[in-house]
Image (cartoon, rainbow over all chains, first blue to last red):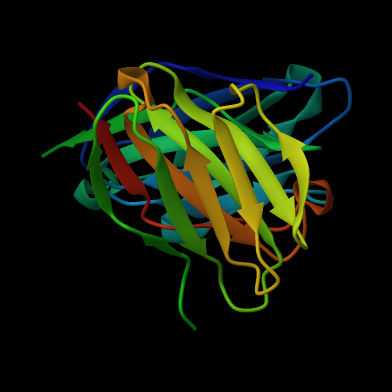
Length: 110
Length: 115
């Protein structure tokens, strides 16, 4: 069975600082990997996804993530945080169904 | 094109009652998945329908059921409501099933409160 672990339920960064949200997965075979963002009282919006091919994936709003099979990780990064990035972020894996991590709430301080 | 539409947005029900939630997927999408989101349990997969057939089911009791119509619209039903069923219920649509790993588009959710 596949599962997703997001390290850190809350991450706080200053505006302009690097954003790093961690995601590790467990799966018997490499799954497909996703990052979603959720703003208050909204559904989830896809930031980026990895299926096959290049392991560094670029998404919307300046986010990117790197699939590292040897580390079973798919960490999300953004070089410079913006106030509008404050939201909850979910890592997800998909094989036979989609499973989500517990989420990481990102706070951006001015 | 229109996104995923969930109705109603907010709902208050009494313990023991039943409730039906509706989800209209993006035009052309044949797969609809349902998720329950709570502060304690996070996002949990309920079930997925593709072309009117349930393809996958999460670990929820039989009180939770769903169906999909020929136009791909889906409904989710919860019978004998319990206080713990209070949650945000999210619906997602995609062109294919999770097996095909196509992008899922989420609705804004239905906030169910059981009192």
